Length: 262
Image (cartoon, rainbow, N blue to C red; front, side, top):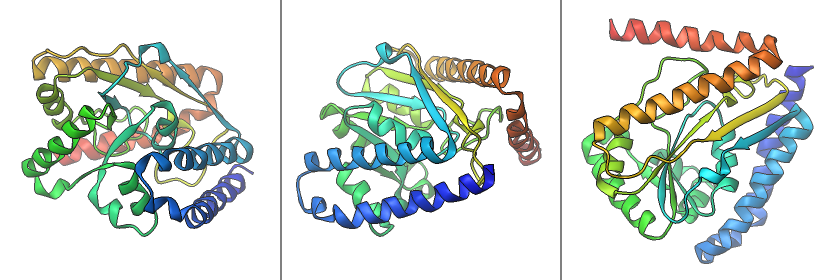
């Protein structure tokens, strides 16, 4: 039953996007401000389908910790859920995303209209320099720049693999950084069609003020996100012990990381 519900949701997910992307295509010719009501309507309809079909709700804690204006958001990345939910959570978000996604028909066009920030990871330090220019402009416009410090989705309890990009942005921009922990991978795992019912929880932690040395910032960011994420995972497992099987991906990732560094 879980598999069939998940399969049905995936079909509904893509159909919902394609239909709305075509119907609302004229917004691509209008100023950016016209995009956000359309984008948020798509996100809300998608999450409604998620609740209805898969039985997955969500709970976001610590909203009072969200600063105003432009700042950096550094979030744990375990599933597709956070890339959707954060569009609703923040007034004008700019995700740092793989530049290849901007070339995907329809989807990439909407990413460009929304002001998402592309990064070409193959260019190394040059990519970070180019990304910083875009981020500086976004911050000046009062936007919330969302970065996943590990660069890609990681399964629950996989060893942290934080990259240097977020620390460099923090040092150069001089703005607060909002850490976000979550446990979405227990319910909507990467590389898996099957989704388990329950409540995804995310927590907005106290923002890290500007001015820390990059090394101290990086250590504090990782410690705060990882400890809060572990607590959210433990809370979910206490309610539903059957979710423990989702941790196998994390154990497998740990073994792959150990082999890769050996």
